Amino acid sequence: MRVVVVGAGVVGTAAAWFLAKAGHEVTVVERRDGAGLETSFANGGQVSACHAEPWANPATPRKILKWLGREDAPLLFRWRRWDPALWAWGLRFLANCTAGRAAVNTERTLRIAVYSRHCLQALRAETGLAYDQRAKGILHIYRDGAEFEHACRAAEVMRRHGLDRLVKTPAECLAIEPALATAADDLAGGIHTPDDESGDAHKFTAGLAALAAGFGVEFRYGSTVLGLVREANRVTGVVTDRGTLTADVYLLAAGSWSPLLARAIGIRLPIVPAKGYSLTVPVDGHAGAPTVSVTDDEHKMVYSRLGERLRIAGTAEMTGLDASLNPNRWKVLLTKARCLFPDGGDYSQAEPWAGLRPVTPDSVPILGATPLRNLWLDTGHGTLGWTMSCGSGRVLADLISGRTPEIDVKGLGLGRF
Ligand SMILES: Cc1cc2nc3c(=O)[nH]c(=O)nc-3n(C[C@H](O)[C@H](O)[C@H](O)COP(=O)(O)OP(=O)(O)OC[C@H]3O[C@@H](n4cnc5c(N)ncnc54)[C@H](O)[C@@H]3O)c2cc1C
Image 1 (cartoon, helix red, strand yellow):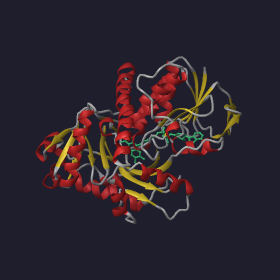
Image 2 (tube, protein in one colour):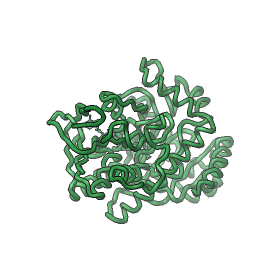
Image 3 (cartoon, rainbow, N blue to C red):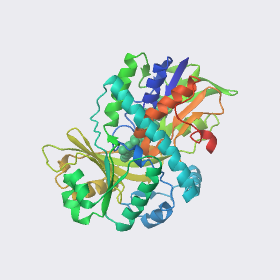
Image 4 (cartoon, rainbow, N blue to C red):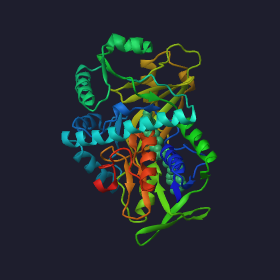
């Protein structure tokens, strides 16, 4: 079949790869001049399957209230904006903050995230694709005793899902990552997930796009999709600023911009952009940069070593489709990084970046069919798009090919809203 994929982020590119491998004739339309230049460009780099937990959980509303109005808040809602879609999303988000909903959503995200890590590892073995990956696990650190105890209880639940979340004392955290020495006295403990990984999502996406192009996928960069053409219950074309493309099947993988394109043809996607920031710092001979990917749970910040660079990422701000850099926000990352890893790199050379995570109210991506016969969705991957990209692409390739996916896709589609 001829398939047009809209969007060459990590999600669309992975889908294009698996669709081509399934024998389809694939064209990817991307407005930027290459693959992975939007939200997939400078993210936290974690392939964090064992920590795939929803934002919406019973503890979140209390935290949001505590952080309200604080410019350094890890999660900041700018409610002043009159944005009905954001308010509707917020109500759905709150409805997902019960223990029961969080348990359902955790199972769903884990199902796709763990499968995705498996697909990524298989893809790497098959292609030899290199992207500064590290398979040394992810270490979550806690300073607050109550938060740590909560994390230990969550680790117990995860073990029931068959995931290795190992509880560590402060001394054991230091043995895993000696660069944490400065924070040692403040640590309450840590949780190590040895099966998780990290790597450069942009290098991965650009590399995979090159491999896919070699495999016959056509990437139309610098082409903006102006709209999808709907006739009755199907899509008949994609109008771009460089002409109209037609295909048998269309896959929407445009991240935070997916709702705009979908709404114009009558499909509402409950996805809002959550702006996050990162800094990329050259390690430059500094001896105190971590080599294991670390998550500072209290500040909701991640640190990933990408070759000779240290990536620092975090914060979420609901502020619409605006990826501008607010120095008040990214300087928070810089201050906290300097404090945790004082000799982590040349912080004077830190490169700030912001990206818009496409977030659903339940933190589960939207994968699968739509009410339109030949339009499919691979979007809404939120905080874990890099982690879930390969599994999502594989699932979509199977569904579009009429094959049964290797995982159960119940609860992952648009029908749940
Ligand atoms: C600060 C930060 C840290 C993060 N850390 C992690 C992490 O550690 N691990 C993890 O798994 N995830 C992480 N994420 C989330 C992850 O980066 C995203 O979920 C993922 O990049 C989303 O990929 P995507 O392909 O759906 O979207 P994008 O990468 O945004 O791709 C969508 C593409 O569609 C294109 N597009 C949009 N509209 C049009 C149009 N009209 N015409 C043509 N093209 C169009 C865009 O140009 C873009 O290239 C982080 C995100 C942020 C912001």
